[in-house]
Image (cartoon, rainbow, N blue to C red; front, top):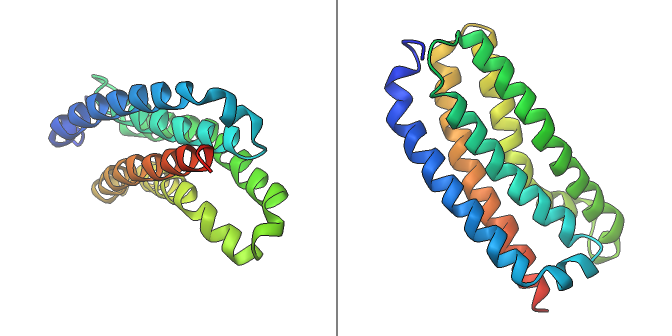
Length: 166
């Protein structure tokens, strides 16, 4: 672990454990209602984006604990994990706009999608700051992104589970 990441080790350990536990709980909650989720046009994409966001938080904080890696490598790792999670989020946003357009204006639909996009943007900013050598700020933004990812995933999962009951 680089010296700059050392002060973040307790945060990363706590986030890996808490986020992994939350991901497990959400997968169980969603699996109970998987038939209803899969019958919807938008809920599978939203559920996948929720889990992908939690996995992104797990990966970023877990990799932050890896010993001996340079910060530029950590920044690249965050970008790779981010690209994968962003794919799930883009798919969810597209599903919302494609299938919910009759339920609201594009502005309302974007607002519906914002919760999932916030952590993606925050992780991107954090990774870019790390790669640009702005290490303290980059690490702070990655920490904020991790908190946003957890909140976002909870909100997205809640929406999925509430929509199943409608």
